[in-house]
Length: 70
Image (cartoon, rainbow, N blue to C red; front, side, top):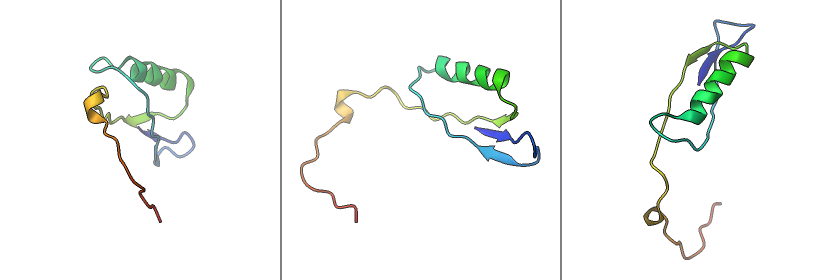
């Protein structure tokens, strides 16, 4: 979500929000946006939604071994 800062309306800030939700209605997102409009001073500029279907057992696979990070 990009929003305008209340004290500096020419600046855009980015807010990343993650929540499990159900497409295509997105009730959690709509509730959050309603809360934002009602309670917060920063006016929303744009909202981008990324969605993937529910996680299914076929999407998980076991990894055997050690994965070094550094």
